[in-house]
Image 1 (tube, rainbow, N blue to C red):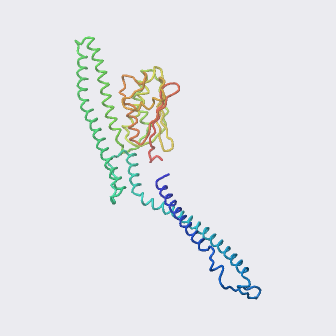
Image 2: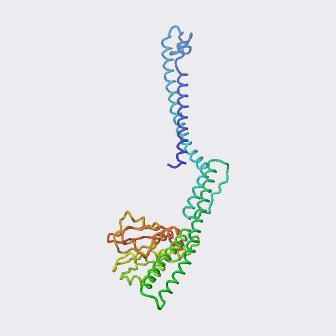
Image 3: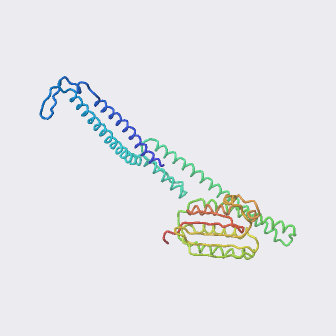
Length: 385
């Protein structure tokens, strides 16, 4: 149950208990008042009227006493019944009223907490750590909670900004010497007097250098993808997938892979360059972590308020319990499938952060025949609805 409902039920319960106690007290007070009193039931003198004849008390004492006892019994029974029934109805109605008033009062009391919750929800959905609650009010528990939340957001924002700046600066500083190394090795390999050993060593160094460059590019893309996409522009996911597949066609043909294109219109909105990187990483993984003569399926479609990109490929069997690890940076599955020297270990991590920055999700599941099926869901472009 929600806090508001618990507060309302607590109000009704308190009223019910207190009302019951008051009703019980009134009941016993009235009952004691209606108990036998000798000065009323046995007076010194009483006149009884029977069929037009008046009798003295001394002559018909028993008749008078019996009638008085009968009147007392009926009067006591009716009075106590009215007190019990009417009082119970009043207490029940009061409990219902207390429930409604408690519900309204709790809404008023919890209104600042609702503001805190809405702000936290917006921050979680938009990844915008610059937003603050800024609650204005007396120095109470809610004010302290809002201030603590704002302080936490400030620390998180500084931490994430510092991490992004560090990765961006480190990647930039590392890219320059790698470019110089590639140039020097390439010049040394192309010299006319270069021996075969030097050429083989140079080719190995170029491969290592290329891997490091891809790793740095992946770190930069990972840093950019973690930032929320605020400037959303409409585009068709089908066009992006076609462009990526055209670029990857030569590599797929070199590996003797069959590519199946099942591309339907899938309008979405966001940063098309980042989404292109997302599709490129998925297609490259499907091609490079495949066996010769395998197959790759790329599908785009529009479903209700979501557009989907599905990339499936043949390959080695992937254990279901290790699926989630492929989305973690530098984490790889055990087996040849994800131990290729051409990968940096950041491809699917970049896919996830780009999808989440666009308000989407990424899921993966192993294929029974081997390989993976990866599904990316992105929000549909509102103007297309």
